[in-house]
Amino acid sequence: MSEIIKEEAKGYKIPEIEKFSGLPEKYPIFMAAIKRQLWASPNAFSTDHLKISFVSAHLTDSAALWFEAQLDANSN
Image 1 (cartoon, rainbow, N blue to C red):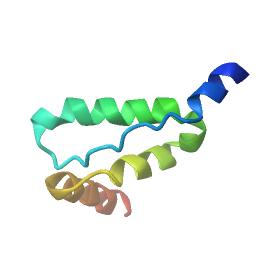
Image 2 (cartoon, one colour):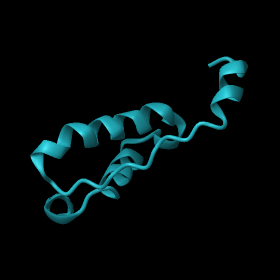
Image 3 (cartoon, rainbow, N blue to C red):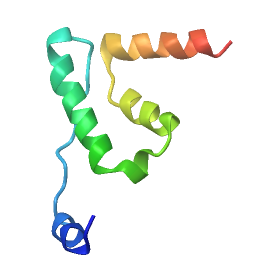
């Protein structure tokens, strides 16, 4: 990225991501917001572990319970 673009982007802030509860109709909007954040800050999410941690921090309700079950199942 050129220095001019970097300088212009300094004041830009990506909107907060609404937490995802697991409702299917909200999934496309949630994933678009997640992809936008990952794309905008690639250095902040340089590993799969960081990406998974970021996404999981934005889960609530049944989505968070599902994620917790995945962690439990894969920890053995």
